[in-house]
Each structure stands twice: as structure tokens, then as C-alpha cells.
Amino acid sequence: MIETPSLVDQYCHGVLTTELGLGTFEAQLSRTEGPPAPGTTLFDTQTGFAVRRWCPPLLGLEPHCPPARYLARRRELGVPDAVRRLLRGSGITTYLVDTGLPGDLTGPAEMASASTAEAREIVRLELLAEQVADTSGTVESFLANLAESVHGAAANAVAFTSVAGVRHGLALAPEPPGPGEVRGAAGRWLAARRVGGELSDPVLLRHLLWIAVASGRPLQLHAGLGEPGLRIDRTDPVLLTDFVRATAGLGTDLVLLHGYPYHRHAAHLAGVFPHVYADSGAALVRTGARAATVLAEILELAPFGKILFSSGAQGLPELHVVGARLFREALGRVLGSWVAEGAWSLEDAQRVAGLIAAGNARRVYELE
Image (cartoon, rainbow, N blue to C red; front, side):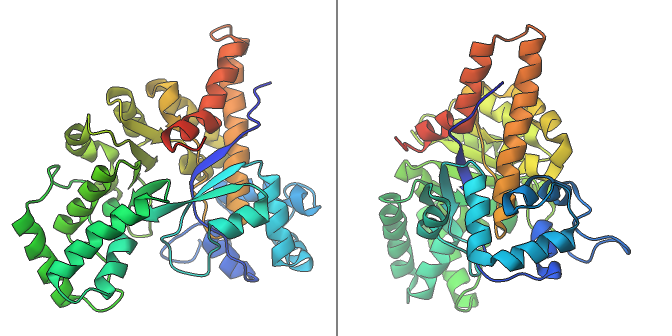
């Protein structure tokens, strides 16, 4: 029996605290550009089946109950009670929360209260830059305020995260842009944008990444599957190889988030570069009953001290539950089979499980 009593969710978002109808709930299960196939629902996915397997018992229902019955029970309990039962039933002991998404999502303090777990903030670089741009009148003030804001955020946040791969793609020039290049890009962006406008300029994205690297805080980089309509060939983590090499030896760890279906590429980079870590989380939530296979593929390449658990969950507390339960089940199945075959000792398997579940994250994010 492989045990993971402590579980650090090294990347997630808050949850919705409003009542959800069937359609809204389904939309949170799987972010797509359109409706499901005729005659089906978005519960007809690996993630949907995993929710029906692991979440109903936490609300007093049998596993695999029909979605309508599950949502009726959720409404009967009320959102606050359902959220508390689900988060506390996940077994997660620490949440690292990216607060950079729009919408009525709980922050770290609310997550900690509802779950009786610890919660810390991850700062999203692009949102920070957009907020600075909204209140800066000139290029000079924007760039000065941006550097000051990143420095100030580093004092309290456990990490920075970047969606440069989503906004532009990961094939960015690896070196820091020069001062003149940055001023020119900032001038063009500020002149063209309205308040709240998204940052997607590749020069400014690179500038942000390098300011974050200089802070010394871990830097999380989104890779692999992401938003609907995203060209995932632009988010293969192997495209970061030159940037990874350029940041080697500077004292900042890089964490490659999500990765799937390029999880082997992320694991390879974690194996080659001392400051690179691979996330094992959202890939398992997406693959459901196949999670053990995907986790075994990550374990093929990445050193065991370089793999981190996350749920990658947002919106639904059910996704935090599914992320944790699938991870624990997959880890137990993979490592347990190696112990049974005599390839590993039980003592080694238990030690590695503790590293991936919590120990590596506690070290990287200095949580002790």
C-alpha cells in the first residue's frame, strides 16, 4: 500500500461559489468551442466519468450515479456545504492558487477556510502587467511600475506563472529583449490597447519572463493543452529548450505545467536541466481511467525529485477531488506494480511517492 498523507496541489485555481445548472456545470468539466456530440453530454469524457466515480460518495451518494441525481444532491446541500465536503474530502493539505483568472473564483484565504488546508498565492505575470498598464500613463511609468510590481509580488507569492504559450506560443526568442526593443513594444501596445486589453506582444512577454527570472521565485510555464481553439503545436514544451538553457545557473526554477500530450517532452527537459521540473497533474485529470499509463510515462524520463503533483483545477471543487484521487490511485497502481514485480522495494516506492505528492513542491516553493 503506497501512502501519501500529505498532498501539495502545486497549481490550481479557486472554485465557483454560485449555484450551477447542468449546462454550466458541464461547461466547467471540459472547455470546448461548442456543444457535445448530439445525444451526449460533456459528462461523456474521461473527466466526467472520473467526477461521477469519486465525487458522489463525498456528498452521500453511490459512485457513478447519474449526473442529474448528483447535481440535485449538490443543490440540496447548498453550494457552501457541497464545496466544503468536496475540498475536505480531496485529501489535499496545501493549495497553491493562481489568482489570475477572471470571474467569481475563491482566493487563497477562502480556499484555506473551506478546505481547512493551507493555501498560498501564485501571481500570473500577464494579469499583473495588464493591471499596471491600466494605471500607467506613459511608457516610462509603465516599465518602472511593472518592475516594481513584480518585485513587490515576489515578497509574498510562492511563485509566478506565465501563459505566454497561450497568448503567443512558446517559440519565443530566448534572450532578454534590449531596453530599446522593450520601450518600442510597450509604446505600441499601450497606444493600441483599451483598459483591460490582453498582453500578447512577444517582446513584452519575454521581458516579463526575464523580470520574473530575476526575482528568484519559481516560474511556472503553461504548456500543452489549454484554452479552446489553442494551437497546441505552439505549446510543446520542447520549444522552450533555448530559454531553459539561457536561464540555467541563474537560481530560478522553471516548472512546466500540464504538458499533456507532450508530457514526455516536459519530463525529458526535467531530466536534462537541473532547474526544470515537470508537472504531473492536469494530464491525469484529462485522461481519467488511463491516468496510471500517463503517470508511468512521466516516470520513464523525469528524475523522481523533479516531478510535482497538481490538480490544475478551476471552477469546480469536483476537479480538485478528481485530480487528487486520480493521482493517488495512479501513483499507487504504478509504484505498487513495480514493488510487486520486485523492481522496486516498498521503502523506495514510499519515499518516491512522498517526494512527488508533497516533498518536491515543499522544497521548490520553500513551503516549510
